Image 1 (cartoon, rainbow, N blue to C red):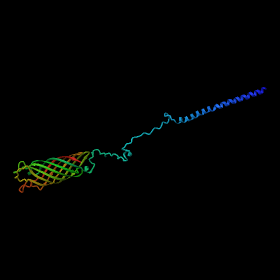
Image 2: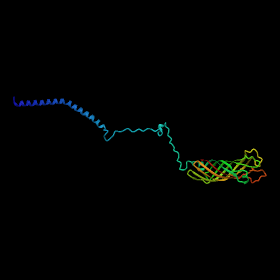
Image 3: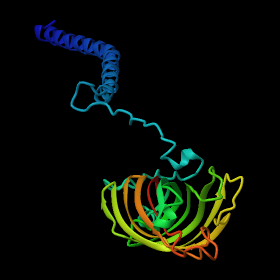
Length: 283
């Protein structure tokens, strides 16, 4: 056999061997390739999870739920059975120094109730010779004392000793009456204080009665009714609802015949004066 033929056989055998080796490797490669591909697929599926997961320490903090607030039933109509709450009203502020006294016409004009007392006596000397200084009292309703023109209505009373020949020594003279006055005021107001000088005049009725007499043979009548014209002046002082009043009153009286019969001097009249102070409540 020639050497060339031998070499050709060897080269052909080596080639066949290499083909067999390559075929063997190819037979084993699909499993490895499949395993590698499977690992790559698993890694590819895992990567989206890592991309969607956010680190709380990163630049974007996780979204927090909105805070909840309690519902106030006084401000939420739905929580109050559909009723709309009525806003609470605040009282109006009262100006300093007014003390709420000027919030209506009656208080601006002025109204007061007063009670008081003092002394009284007659003007005519002949009458004073038979009587003495007596006690005086009154109760009065006043309207409009904080304005220029006001009115008054009053009950007045007095009691005095009386002496006469033929009259019981224990006898006394009591007077009761009703009066209505028109008064002119000059009101001076400073905050809660009122200072009101005034003058007044009016008409009234008076009744005189003898009391405590067991016998009476004198010329003095047991009772008498007279027409009264009260005239005078006074001064009011008020602080808030408290009022103090002082006044002097002169009362000419007409139609009197208490102290005499037909033979008695006509100068023995019942004209009298009173000086009184009173306290009261003003609106």
